[in-house]
Amino acid sequence: MSRYNYFRRKSSVAKAGNVEIGGENPIRVQSMTNTSTLDTEGSVAQAIRIAEAGGEIVRLTTQGVREAENMAEIRKGLDAAGCDVPLVADVHFNPNAAFKAAETCEKVRINPGNFVDAARTFKKLEFTDEEYASEVEKIRDTLVPFLNVCKAHSTAVRLGVNHGSLSDRIMSRYGDTPAGMGESVMEFLRVCSDEDFSNIVISIKASNVVVMVETVRMLAGKMNEEGMSFPLHLGVTEAGDGEDGRIKSAVGIGTLLSEGIGDTIRVSLTEDPEKEIPVAVKLREYIVGREGHDTVVEPDTVLDGASRGRSAGVPGFENVGWPLVAGLDFPSVPGAWHKVDASEEPVLLGDTVPVVVTSHNANRVGEIASWIDRFVALGGKNPVFISLGYEDNDLEDFQIKAGADFGPLLLDGYGSGIVIDAPAFSLEEVNSVALGLLQAARLRVSKTEYIACPSCGRTLFDLQKTLKEVKEATSGLKGLKIGVMGCIVNGPGEMADADYGYVGAGPGKVSLYKGKTLVKKNIPSAEAIDELINLIKANGDWKD
Image 1 (cartoon, one colour):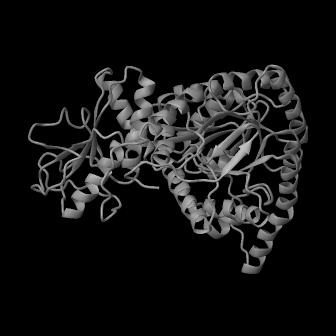
Image 2: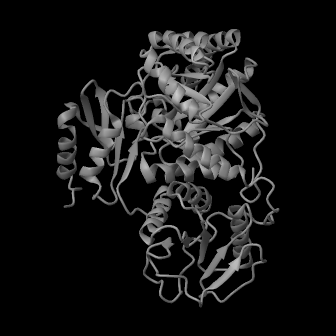
């Protein structure tokens, strides 16, 4: 793995039905149905639409044994239609459902946060070292029999950790941290390794892009330390819809793919599942297109946060917010600025000279990172603005590519600002993408952020319609983060850093949260948005 030169991380191979994941295989694209898994006809029809769009793996929620058993009927329906896409059973809180699903599906997702540990209460628990070790040993007691069923049926396993579903036990020792997320999955992986079970894919996700990227990087390093190389599935949970969902996903997934990490991906949008697939395919193809690029110089010194904020003393930029956006914070790139191609050797300039760096390498992200690291290592203190151009005519293509390019640089601290040249789009459209990039990287908040799940069979209301209504009612509240979640599986945890939360609690019922605190329970859905507005007003966060 390298931030400068693109090549795939070497992983072992897992197999779900006829689809191999990892190794030399292509990066696989997948999605999840939002139908009830007891609705055989509806689930078959939606799985076919996902497959026809290019989805290579389809996941369905399996809350209980009945849903797990019905996966066999869905499989029959797909086979009859000539669709051999592998099915993944998504299991939470119910090991019995996982055991049954292992007999009926090509792959079973279990969540280390709730497969053995009790449902989280967000309470601080205290464990002695001996008590903690005893709790960890309970994992083995349940996991080993499950793995034996998977072995007997050639069923793959996905160990899927979500930021929003860490157990109280893990949080008591590690807190709500990337380290806790990593250890949650490593506990299970060590048992799998002891049992010589390797048909595994790992996912470790968060709605916060910064947390997601840091955690996956950390996990990849930890696995390497312990001699493991299992395939990794990537995704930004609760990314939302529209431009925000696409940019957020491209920044998170694109950053890791650009480092060669990732063997299968899902772009989680609060839209029809089949609409996720073209976005994921475009992102995959854009990153993979860097293969065989001209070699980038590997700096002798790898720096963190290489250039952001190096702007003191530059005339005209003393009292501005960083990072800057060309065309918004300043009208153009003045001729007095020093323009450089990242293929050139860096040289020192006067400290007050702003620098604009671009690249024409197929891996321009890596080349720009290399140039900035080498420039700073020389002693350069100038503000460095990253300039990239896009010839696309399709707005979605532009959003995805910009996210995949700027994401790795912004997340790792490169750049005092960004310069985007996209002549096919209006200045308003370009600025919207630029600000979306900065917000996804948690660098500059310019609008309301919505943490919204893509919906699944557990969702008991029309989440797409509800998200639209919540946006219409609250989009003017700049700087607020609002969670719109279909159910409680990940809801309260995944939106933990949201200011307010709207969470499905049952048929026609919604619960409202202030941060992690449940404020109003089981509100009729017809009243829920008005109650959300009242809650925001009561806390002094409403602005007319």
